[in-house]
Length: 544
Image (cartoon, rainbow, N blue to C red; front, side):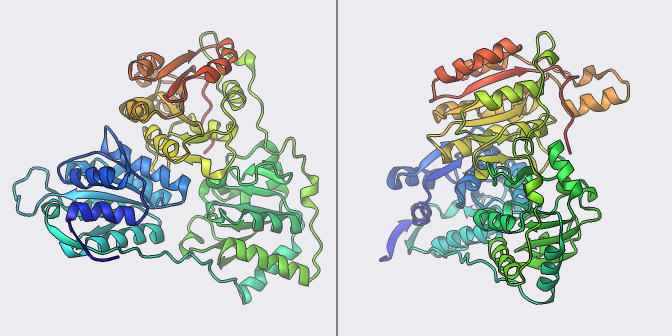
């Protein structure tokens, strides 16, 4: 491309176009206003304005998770960036590749009340940081930020000095390609030891995590060659949906049948999973078993559980290589998968209609009904709270990329913002958010109208026990009066209508029976809220 003269704000917008950015999440201020305006008017970008800066970062994170591409959020300077701190920590822990384009206070404005060391804010969150160095390096610095986000798999703050915006510069297209060739196939003593463990196993299980996404066919081929049951971590939930050897989630969220299968196993081949404490139930589920762990990151090995042998390699290539050597050695399949009953392997005990108290619905029964009633091509997003693990167990998606949760920092109130990002990435499919009443009030209410303005096909299920659940449990466990944890919330269904959406209260099995027709008749260009009335004493404890 021939060098072109632009103002810096125009160069920033052009750089986003060079990186094929179509959607920008954010909140405008004096330090990012002009480049966003130019990106929309001149390059056709879609700008999604939020009420709170952190919401834009959460939406970009979810958008990146669903699309598999680096997504973009933008805020102005000072408190705008500090308002993103919780979201950035969540994104770092989730390894979400986004670029947060943050304006920065002019250095000459020494007494500007919004001035803060923005590098230190990013550092505190664990995010990357790229400074736009001069007006002549704008395109290069944007390209560096995108490259770092993609390769480091974390949010990167791109710091944009406000005083640069109207300075003239030369724009040259700069895009750094990301080299994503799989890591080498392992060989040597460690690989030989792994093959020996796998070959001698009588009841092996193949466990896949988020690092195995994209290698599903190779992982399935390995499990079928070994005749081993297939399991996933929560991050890879639905990866083996419909396969007869699928036992669902491995860990504290396993079904009773899956727990029994895991207990009988003698070897676990782990592909692209970090063996989190909830996956291993603090190590108890792997006690007495041989564990072979495969991951491209050495940091993922041995952090929470130390395997018998580890291979730093690509999941798909390693699976194929194991199959090759099992064939070469003429190792017979284990036959373990043949013991499974596909009809029960992934089923949790059904909720019962008779468990519903008057004025409330039983949570397990309601979730089982929602699994049937909600649109089958749904994209799922989850907020944090004591309700979440029961939902993870009972409500499914058709694809692991369409199962998005934001709970790695232990915060509530992040879910609706993330559901906006998933809905923007998957227009044409209905998005479904499960959130708690406390989480909805903490963050969902703030951004509900954002979903209205974007005309999103979004269904929000508020698991409403009118209490802060974890605190309610702690007080009742100590025989204390839990009233301090209770809340007399307004009607969420009426609040949804007031904010431009629609809503309905569900407080009985009959309401659930009539919900299917309401969902079918809903207007798909605005969010629809389901206020699910739960008794605080009946919500199951978290399975963690």
